[in-house]
Length: 385
Image (cartoon, rainbow, N blue to C red):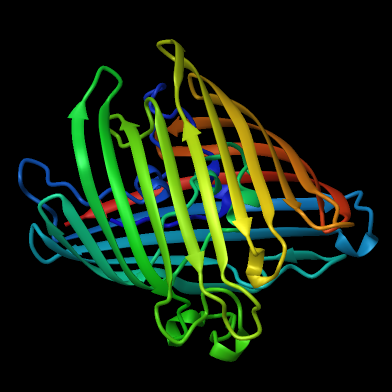
């Protein structure tokens, strides 16, 4: 199926196939945009549902501007539903329930402004090595928004995701082979799209508003004039978790919308791998660099970098990630972030498997510095019939 680029807080991915613990439902397939449903002994379920449930508390404090401080408790629920009409044709829906408005400053909020919307809703067809999806799609670009470790490791990278676009994507599997580390695949994905301006751009419960052409913004054009092209090399284990060298090279053009002076051109290179230290210990580094020409449709270029590493031992995961975003314009300060997290997987008889993690972030964005601590509980559910 095509990918979701999940919220940055979903990047808590313990084990990466080295500890025997399960990753969040669908995470590898979503973050790398290359997986299509596979049959088990030639049989696919009619309906399969994978749901990730998260409960998170963030406390932003000691900020350089008092108005930027806030506390927020919120839920993020992401159901993915696949209906297999046949071995080669399916319908796919990925919904997201989360806060759809920014939390108000200087407040403590509980489950405020939560809304439900479609991130992906498409029909997919498989024709040999080619998988095509049409509808609401997530064009492939970077991987750090999903893969950077820790609660906040993917925050900067998520700012340049372009999710829920209206268009078509085509994934072509160049090769697939087994290796000592796992299954090695090479995939090219091409996408043609524009911003979704249908009623699906709104959200239920709390309405985030329908996107209009007059809203402007790169990618928000009358027709599908934006595109992305990505090459992805993955090494995945039997659970579709990263088990060895994985990389992506991608280019993306977001066409100028109303009020934009230029098209935005983006280039990204990303790599991740797993270095096993023993049967239950591993180090998982990740690096991603993205460069933007005429960022946001303006006249300035920008570079964004994310570097991180996770140390896994049994059910425990420790991570450290740094990121920066530099708009290459005179007098514009560089944004940066340093974040650390510790997490643990639990397997409880009555509760099943779930994850708990604690994270800290120090960041400067748009000249405002601040500290954030957070706690995240993650539980995944799967069902098929």
